[in-house]
Image (cartoon, rainbow, N blue to C red):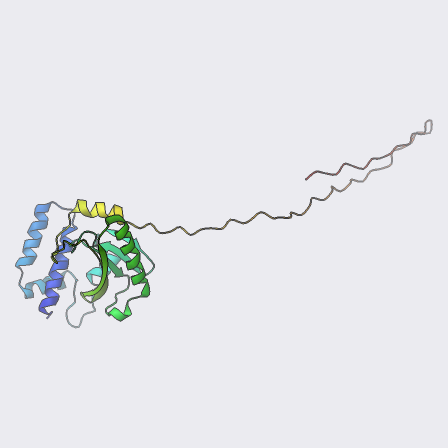
Length: 229
């Protein structure tokens, strides 16, 4: 049996997933209401049935964040490096709230790769330059056993409450905050400073012309001109 706080977090994550469905808003609302009306036992069985969690004794299924990393759940990715991705939070604490998700399932803060913080700082700088907040804070948290880093801009009017971002807002933010990976610079080979000089063409063999007895004609061969390379 999952703890109360775990079930609460899972309901929030399932609700976030529903928001990404490409269906009419009425269907999304009905699905959210159905999830909200479930008891803890009913919701846990729902999670087991949909392979979000596992029954005791079964092999553990992937967490939601691992599914996001693998592209099994749609998201708004703005940046990536070899070990992490950066996605927009769909229920942000403020405009431009970004999550840094390690590609591997990491459950402890001390196991976060240094590259996660590197990407978080890179995203923070992008947020500062585009959205101009008063400050940007980095905070680690553990959701469903997956350690993540929150990149949170602060403008001075935050309430501490999450608000659902619309699809239009997310698309606009994605375009503004998307970080294009630097293309590696390729050094072209430098021209050879002192090319090998062209050699004079090989002189073909010439035969001495036959001299008629009647007239003695002296034939002189001139050396072929040097080939200009």
